[in-house]
Image (cartoon, rainbow, N blue to C red):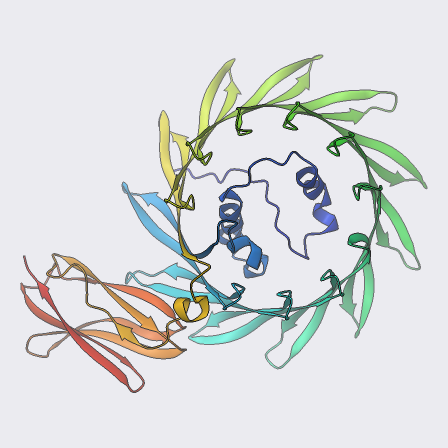
Length: 483
């Protein structure tokens, strides 16, 4: 089965992604104020699962505008006509709805989730994140990996981020970002590497703005042996509506600025972005390169996007997307097609499902294979309301062993249990004579809610017992296998 992860335009507020990604940021910041739905949170999680990078997580990515918190995401792949678990990300929040811990888990052959990476977050009184730290599991021992610390000014703007790595004894500096503001506008950003016990300049960005606080110019530089050397600059212009009109890229060569590329944006009367045009400077004039044409419905939902490239003095079809929505303007599907041999051909699709609160609960990626769209990847999402006591309601307060379900069962059943603190525990199964059958869990667990699956296809019908042992806590329950 061929699985291709489609290209995602991803923007997260991440202090590591500032000037380097300002191009994508400005195109989003200054584009029409279209409906923001839960898909942006899903894209964040897809990025996490692809990179396995816990630091990309930000509290805002899991706090939805409708008052819900995203607490669990499961990633699955389609195999043998069924969905198979791969990874799970579990979030824990404090009473202020700040993300305080995240765990990345993999699905084991014994049908349990194994945490192999976890992150911890702390905040100041203004809910600004002041520390991130993650750990990796190594031979049943948690080992420190990275730590990032943050400082802010009185306006809650990030001033300094310092990155460190653990060397088995202490934290060591690796990277620093320093930022300067005028009001709330970022005007200067400098990156440093830690070398020979001191901070050494690496990259530098300078920003200027108009009276409407729109960026007019972004100048990028790198450090030479003695001073900053120009690298590139972006120049922006805007319509009276404050939508971005042009974005021009210049690069520094032979002590002079050279013109590189230009993007031009067009909007309809509702401020919907309906055309993006990309051009290259050939030394004398602008040459077309590519363009996007977009269509919207009466609810400002994007319903079609077509991408073209310029060849032989005319626009050629390249790819297009179709979008559908429900009555609540939630995106239900995206279908992507490629223009091949003078015909539009399906390439991949994304399907969405929502709960009664318009929270995205399922996202399915399908890919063209064997003459049809076939399932490839699925993401499942679970939420809790912000109004809950998220620290105590989301983090278990005591050991609990639940009754298995279904019960009676044939041939498998689920055993759910809760762990309030870091503990080494076991769950074992016995027959009615007290004879040992198997171990479902036998490892250290972080605080959380877990499930284990018991398979009885090779056992006779009858009464069985399962027992959890975690330190001084022990509990036994009965289950019935009925064939």
